[in-house]
Length: 116
Length: 111
Image (cartoon, rainbow over all chains, first blue to last red; front, side):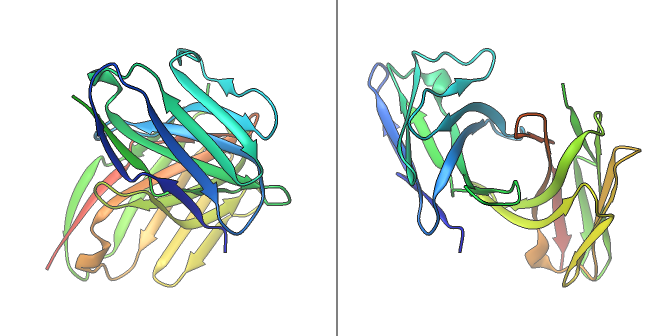
């Protein structure tokens, strides 16, 4: 149980285009989903917290207009990187927390974004 | 702000030796602490989760301890195997459900 999927696993895009990444909780309902990014040999940094049906809360320094987050249902959150640039190239990982859990987040397999 | 430090950043051990990985955090007001494994280019695999009221958790060859008052956790891996080669991440849950991660211990087990 507690499986989280992400799609796509890898994406390469041209500078200036937008990319959408999906995060799904497959066998549980998640009121809260989290988006992280990870640079090589660095720790995961929380970008934003999204709650179903409400606006996402962004961490300091994360541009909300650049990283659009939509948590439309209890099993799906999307991250759209708008007008992507090479510096946005990174590993993006989502996690989800069950409605009635023990404060544990379950992580997706990650999405490798490369912007040319 | 919660800061998590993992020492050593990287280590290599011969197969069969026990591994000791250290994690420290600055704010002892945590809900829980979790150890993850991450293989190159992959996502996170949860290994052990220790609630703030617990002092240790065990799973097979893995044992993790938590000393909340001193802000420390140690992950022990007994009788290491080449398949244990990976990066091990420590994370603490604090504040408003925020997870703070360390940079990881990169482990290589030499056959």
